[in-house]
Length: 263
Image (cartoon, rainbow, N blue to C red; front, side):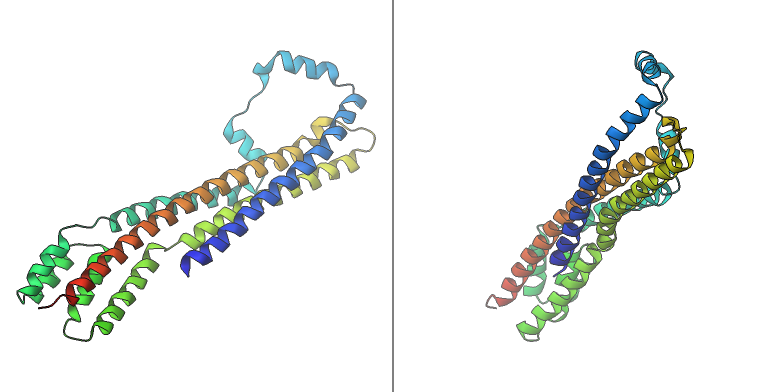
């Protein structure tokens, strides 16, 4: 249920990313011929040749480009920080949850067969991972029908999976929301560029359009970068969660087989 819902969210996010890329490419293809005409009209060919032969005068620092993106870069940067925080927080939490002692079940079997139920419970509490907590719940239900024991273990397992998947929907939202914010910055930049063209009249200069064009390009790139990173980070976390869930299911099966063994 959880994996299906998150896959739907990620598919929508990927669709938004692809839609943004295609739309931005369409805008840029339409804008390039217009810029060429403007450069010819303003007789800027000589200046462009000079810039091409002397590139040392051009600065492309990251902070300068970020400022060119305008205020829309602020939420994009915030989303990038959120995505990085969620990834590392969930990555180490899931990695810790997947650390399970393979000899734990043998020790529990020894305690149960010798009637040392309290010792088996204390042993499970010494291991802080979902599988141990599920077994602990099952041990506490020994003496009841096996269906009740299985139901109790399953309920604990669902709670543990929910803890592991904490904040994953937010990471999926970042994967879809960051490109949309970049797309919003693109539209705003295009509006600014054409607004400046309308106000300039016949005195059109390419430098007059640089602000809007910079905003359009920078926000698009920033949004796509954050969205792509969040997308891959989400898939990595989901894969790790599935590995932990597999270990939990295997451990539960072995424990139930242990209870089904004849005394």
